[in-house]
Image (tube, each protein chain N blue to C red):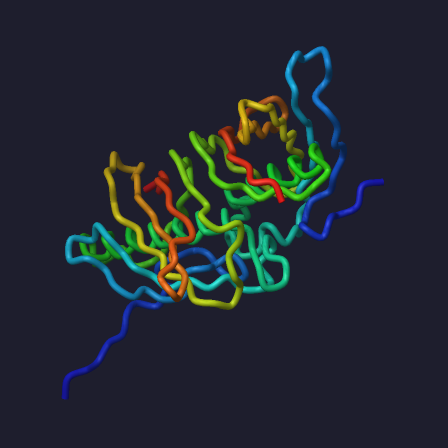
Amino acid sequence: MPRPEPAGYEILGSAPAPPASGVEGWHLSVRIPEGSPLFAGHFPGHPILPGVAHLGLVARALADWQGRKAALAGVRGWKLRQPVKPGETLEVRLTRTGEGAVGFVLERGGEVVSRGTAEVAWR
Amino acid sequence: MALIEGPPAVESLLPHRDPMRLVRVVVEVAPGFDRIRCMAVIPPDNPLAAGDRAPAFLGLEAAAQAAAALEALARRENDASSQGPRLGYLVGVREATFHSPDLPTLEPLTVIVQAAGSAPPLAVYEARIESQEGEVLVTGTLSTYVPS
C-alpha cells in the first residue's frame, strides 16, 4: 500500500525504463494526494502543483535510478504545459541524453504536463 | 507632515501564501517597471526544504514570484482599479544554472528579475539570485503566463 512520502507524494512505482523502449532510462510513478503539503499556499482555494515540485520529482527519480542523491546543476528547454492538481497521478520518465544530462517528461494520463533537460551533479 | 509609505506589502501583490511564498519584501522597482529587486526567504517548513537547506531549483520559484510582483506593480501603475493579485503560472525555463547545489533556509536571498520581452499574457524574464554576501546562486531565463 503506497504511503505518503514525507515529501508529500505517494510512490506507486519506480523502475528502469522497459528494455523494449530501447532507451536507457527510469520511470517513476507518483500520486500527489489532496492535502499534500506541496499544494500549501500555492494557491489558497486554487491548488496547483508548483513547477519547481516537478523538478523535485525529477531529482527523486534520478536518485532512485542511480542509487545516490543527485543535485540538479541546471535545467534547459523546460516547458510546463498543464497544471497538476490534487489527487492526480504523474509518470516521470527519464532518459540519458549525454554525459551529465537527462531528459525528463512528466505525464498525466498520457498527456505531457512538462518536459525538459536536467543537468546533473552527482553527490 | 508628509506621510511615509513603505514598499507595497507583498501579500497584496502575490496570490502565494506560506509556506510557498518566498518573496518577502520588494526592495526596489525600476521606474519603467522592467526590473525588480526583492528579498526572499525560504521558510524551513517549505515542502521542498529539508532542515536548513533547500534544493537550488527552488530559486526558480522565488524568481517567478518576483516577476509576478513586478507584473502586479505594473498593472497597478497602468490601471488604478487593478489592485488584487492575479494567478500566474511559470510556463518555461529556457535555461537555468544552479551555481550552488542548494540554498539556505531562513537567510535573506536577493532576487533580481529583469524583463526581457513580452507578448501578453506571456512574458520572459532574466533572473539572478544572490546570497547575503553577493554570491550568485541561481541564474536563468524564465517565462510566465498571467491570464487576464
